[in-house]
Amino acid sequence: MDTVVITGANRGIGLGLVQQFLQSNSSVIATCRNPDEAKELLALKHTANLSIYPLIVNDAQSIASFAEELDGRTVDVLINNAGVIGGPRQSLQDMDYDAWSEAFEINTIAPFRLSATLLDNLNRSKHPRIINVSSQMGAMASASTGHHAYRSSKAALNKVMQVLALELDSQGIIVCNVHPGWVQTDMGGVNAQLTVQESAAGLCNLIGSLTMQQTGKFFSWEGEELAW
Ligand SMILES: NC(=O)c1ccc[n+]([C@@H]2O[C@H](COP(=O)([O-])OP(=O)(O)OC[C@H]3O[C@@H](n4cnc5c(N)ncnc54)[C@H](OP(=O)(O)O)[C@@H]3O)[C@@H](O)[C@H]2O)c1
Image 1 (cartoon, rainbow, N blue to C red):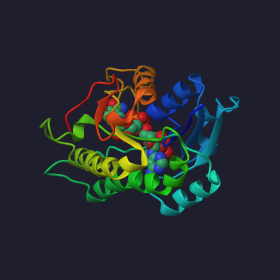
Image 2 (image 1 turned 90 degrees about the vertical axis):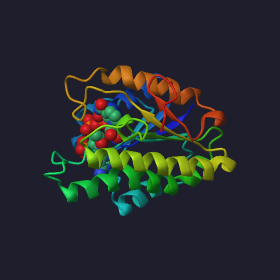
Image 3 (image 1 turned 90 degrees about the horizontal axis):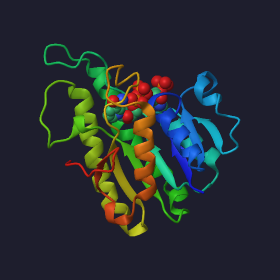
Image 4 (image 1 turned 135 degrees about the horizontal axis):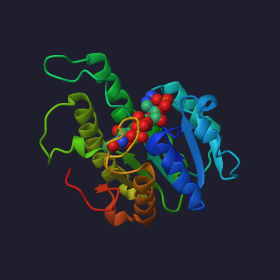
């Protein structure tokens, strides 16, 4: 049975991933900023395989406390899902620079810090995987305008994890970034193409099938390899 750590698990794609991994009989360690207020996550608490921890991903102390709580427990899959869009003002005429910095902290630096902190836990696994929920909006291969903060933070996440994949190759740790599709969440909006369930089911299948041959690559929720 895989043990799966998921960040930003109280709503959106993170919550969908919790449900999918519980259905596939994994043991899920769901993390979120405010567990006491995470109603939908707490409603799943009757499931014996679910544990819930507080974790603010851009807070170094919070990451350290979470690692301490895990107390050396094996982690088979770490899913860095928590993310932000970077605020509503992201244009040449009107940029919120503080929100841009925060987007880098949450979308780029936090996945690296959490991966580094949980390395010993991952190394205890026979099939360790670090999965980062990125976005095609950060792909260098597809040029588009607007959303500078979001796009650049995801592009940087892609590069950071491509490097980490090479560095962790000799330890047998798979590192992959995924694009979840355009999903009906608070971030994706109601007009998005996919339900949370569709996206999370695809991601769950993909994550279950990954081998070392695929480390360092970028995949869609359907398992299609994407250009960086
Ligand atoms: N939806 C899409 O169409 C789409 C497309 C491509 C990529 N993505 C990516 O998919 C991931 C999930 O997005 P979503 O659509 O599910 O977004 P969402 O509905 O806005 O949920 C974002 C999640 O991230 C958490 N989060 C934000 N900042 C955090 C922090 N500092 N510490 C801990 N948790 C934090 C939120 O917690 P709170 O409730 O506490 O705010 C929430 O659980 C993100 O990385 C996003 O960039 C989404």
